Amino acid sequence: MSFTYWNTRPRYGIVTTASASRSGDWSTTWTIINPIIEYIWDKGIWFKDNSYGNTVVNGTSEGNVEAAVGLQIDGPYHTFITIDAESNGVGDDFVVTGSYNNFVSIFSQANFTINGSHNVVQGGHLQNLILTQSGGACFSNFLINPKVLGTLTEGGNGTRYMGKTG
Image (tube, rainbow, N blue to C red):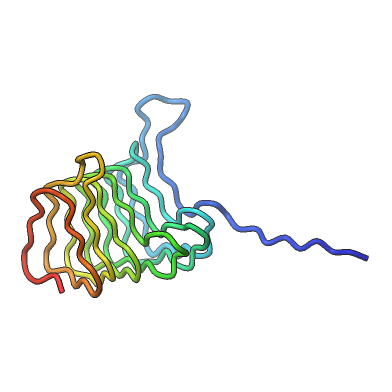
């Protein structure tokens, strides 16, 4: 007798986006407290470009496999406070393409990549902080005393530093 074993896992954890059926119906001003997102196949938390103003307090997005991203932030005006992102496959812990987002006391064991403008990173422990210049979108970001344990790659324009970054 032969058995087939299934190893299933969801592709995404939390995704915010607009309604496909109602124009202008965006995912806005949610407060998510202590989400535990683990073992996702693609993106643990994904705030798409048509969602804005959401807040995540505490929690984790870790252990996501394959080419997983812990958190992908494409929309503006989101706030993340004390989020733990680690062991996320071969991808980044954070990918930020949106603008005007705030990251306070973030823990990241891999790459924290920003390709957006006017984002604020305050405190936290980041292994690698990468500010990219893909498409000219990375400018006027603020780094307020983040502890960068590995590499700080400055590819953006007009990044403002307050305090030490290491």
